[in-house]
Image (cartoon, rainbow, N blue to C red; front, side):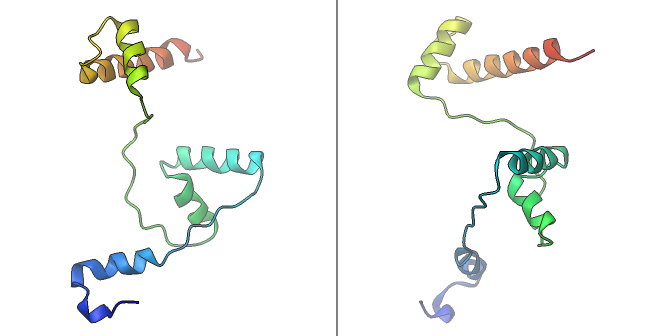
Length: 111
């Protein structure tokens, strides 16, 4: 371990965080589903909800509600074609995809 006195003060917190160990729980589909739904209802990440349930501190800031996916060049090409948008105009494709998601939810709401 490097001498902590040689580590800049602003990085010492990161050194402590680097000592954390990621733990995965094999708890089954139903337990995972319940915890993920609770996390969503509480505007938390599933990890933060698990920390709450276990009585641990939750230090992360509230999450900005957004959805994210990874898109390949082929995905952009498919969406560009579907939306009749130039494949190189990724901002317009992203905006149209967001509109598509909003429309999906609005048209599928239970009355």
